Amino acid sequence: RKGCPIDAQHARSHRLNIAPVATMDAVQLYRAGKYAEAAAAWSELAQTADDAASHLTNAATCKMELGLYRGALKQAESAVARAPHHLRAHVVKGRALAALKKPAKAQNAWRAGVDAATAGSDVVVLRELEQLLTDDAPPPPKPSVARGPRSPQADLAMVVAAAPVRETSKEAERWVDKGVPQDVLAQARGAVEHRTGQDDVD
Image 1 (cartoon, one colour):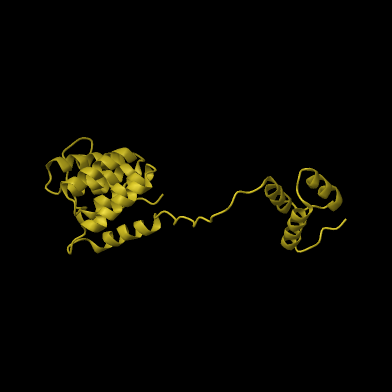
Image 2 (cartoon, rainbow, N blue to C red):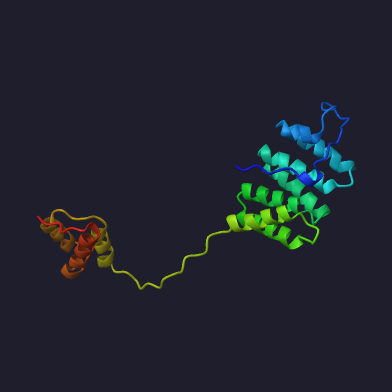
């Protein structure tokens, strides 16, 4: 799984006075792989800092690293609600939804991020959103081909065509006894010979 980067634009050093990280900042905790402590630090900062959306987004990113997808989604949604134009929050929200096996909602989240972009938005994050939409887009539906009802004989002929017959006379008798007409059986045998590139002869 590819990890989400923290909000680099706002990843400044924030000295904390909360135990047990009195002398470390949230960025250092994140870089040290201490995601639980970093998430707690950024959540604390979001309660008092002006740029709460960035801190909530970074806390959500840490929870993604921990596999706490529901918690990540909750904080990313809070970040989007506080700052709809904060594109990184949309990225993390979509990733959390994708991790929760909700691909359609993930697509909606990333599309909302693209729609929320402004002239001052981070171009790199905008490109990331656009790439996520392309990479995780569901495959186009296959065209449906109208088919008439198949007869039991046609189904049996398909079975014959799926498995090359080595004992022609015995197999022919067995399938004829099951109701496969001789002409249908001959067509199936022809399909087998065409596929294998050789005639199966006793």
